[in-house]
Length: 110
Image 1 (cartoon, rainbow, N blue to C red):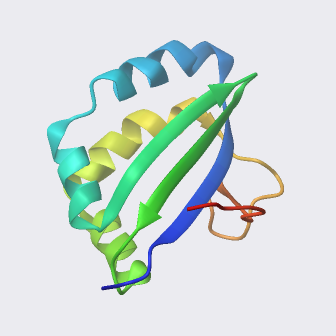
Image 2 (tube, rainbow, N blue to C red; image 1 turned 180 degrees about the vertical axis):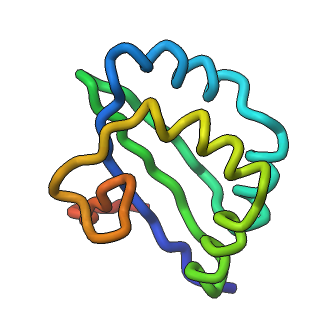
């Protein structure tokens, strides 16, 4: 069994796109949830506060890079991202190649 890896990310959401972003995520396309699960991601949540979105998920696979490539190659996922990404405003402090800025885990309790 693989060790669970936890990921947190933060990004801004455009004020005029917040309602649409919430609508999308209130009724996600079944193919999107299926792909997320196929890529060994679970316990995925997105939270909102004061113009920022915070995401958290757990990864249980053994090749994160390959699973992320699989997701990025999926046509339906790319359709979904085409709807979601225009709603977002990445942080200037994000890492190279990141949309959501990765966050360092400071504390965890099982």
